Image 1 (cartoon, rainbow, N blue to C red):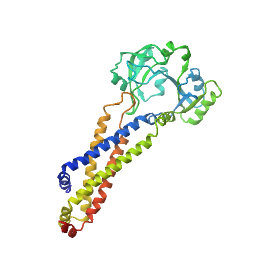
Image 2: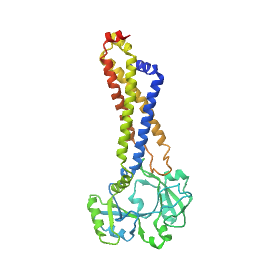
Image 3: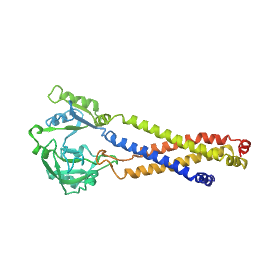
Image 4: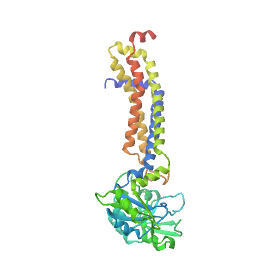
Length: 380
């Protein structure tokens, strides 16, 4: 505590330089945390994937359907506890820029397979009672101002025509990074108006394995059940399925590592240069401090504390700005299903700032510690 007045006096001596250094930290940490948020948005599906869920898709491609009759056969496989299914709809709301995912789901089983999505019981009951009913994620509802009871028109793409839905519920998530952008409606309503080629087909199946069952063996059994058929399947864990989408977007981990490295060394150079100049400017003062009784270790701690204080102020400002920015929600209008800075990202940003403060201040601090009083006073 006795060093605090001296620390602030040193920092405020060159206000412009201190402000620029703190600003450099703030900008760099803001960008770093923003990249962490974007990475989390891309990998969100992997992070929140159910450990006990498998996805069954057509072996040729995800866009190829599977017969609805497969549901009962999948349900009978050893190790399978529950099965549901869904179809991608791909409708347009008012304008093609207003993108959000729309799924026709099996209204009798879908909620059970995805307990992380929370829908009030009365709203779900209203959805079950209305063939044109829909459940909307809170993020999409907030984006477009949807409320329970609203009528939402969509223009079909693959399923041509004008479709209308009644908003019967709005779902939220158990976790802060759950996808709240989806729009669910009933599969039987889709089949009622679907063209002949789409009748009695599902886009994919979601399987929950029984407790204690081996997911690899269950996946193999499901695929073997439909081997050599006209509609062969590929079954994989939900996490593996989501990871395949992330891989299609490129090596995000490498990009994050490269940018993080650039940020680290840029901050290191800026802060190290600032501290080196500050120590050179105060050579005489440091010599006087040693003369009046400050030991080498006290001078070392003083310079290191100054470097860490710069890192703390700039890092806290940058991380705080990044967190405030992410609280506003997705700025891309639907491209990122979640826009959330996780605690791990905040911790990584704080660790980066701390590491830069320690490393950048080490050499100037050691130089100050080794300063000889006679030699320093001779330079004055």
